[in-house]
Image 1 (cartoon, one colour):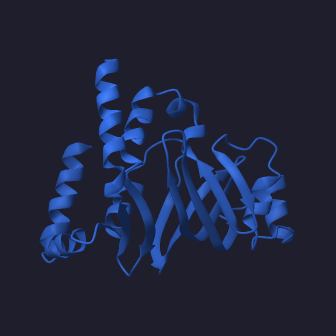
Image 2 (cartoon, rainbow, N blue to C red):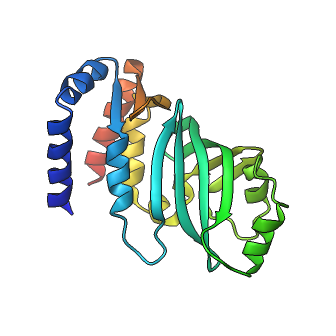
Length: 216
């Protein structure tokens, strides 16, 4: 996988020689870009029985447009939506990400007479407010902390594997006082992550580093 990643990265830079200069210029403003080609490469290399199939990634600035065939309770369904991240809040105990889902579409990827297929074909689902649908799912993932209208908020620190990992908490404790994310947006061929630096939080971050070092 690592060799394939390096090969794909080298191939992309060769085809887009101005990418290095563009990234360097943007980095001066604490903005870093991920080419959509990179996201497509990763999506195409996800393996697994329940991994999304036929993934398509495009942009509808400032949102990201995602489409894939997924397994919905044994029924193959093509799901598509425009995804806009409107909040990223980082603290030692929380990693909240607010997502707006718009222009959501569900269609059958094959013939089926399952309850899911019947529900989709009936048109009874209000896809303009996916958050309301998620809110009433009986067994929501623990990471889903809010769902309303077209907005869903997840907190990755509610995932037990992350919450119980002391290394993750230490990293968040050091980064959160000095670094934040002010926006995540797209243009025609990039996903741009715009960071926010807070130099006033540097003493707190240094204190956390020293504390972690002493604890070891």
